[in-house]
Length: 165
Image (cartoon, rainbow, N blue to C red):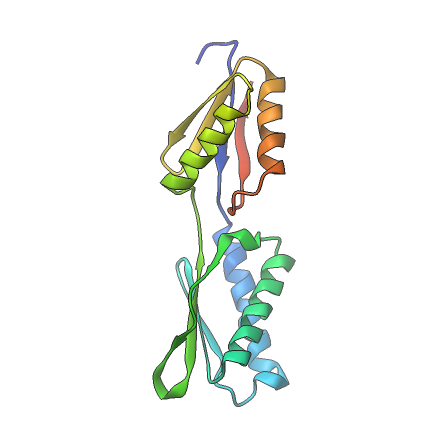
């Protein structure tokens, strides 16, 4: 990269340890709260998936609210959570999967690069795996792109890293 070029990366990531901490706090709260007693409500965490099970749909939705609250307290964006449908499970129970998304998927990356190109700022954006590299000749152009991206809602949490002058 020439000396007169500046760059930064756009990523969408959540700290796995913070997700684990939020899950643990939610799990403890559900085990001890009076309104969850006798409802067989439980959680399980598997890599990027949180599975909730309960005997009633109302208790399942309450458990989702507990998880959301813990995510907010741990400063994890709720945009990182994708809710699956409420499905019937064994013994008349219901279950739901919450997917914790990491990385920028291909279609989102195309949407972001198209937005950057149509913003009118003289920068280049290229997809590099699950992140986007934005390069330009002026720091002000890069800062304009960052503020434009922050003002728009793309449905995923965005972080700006590797700012290189």
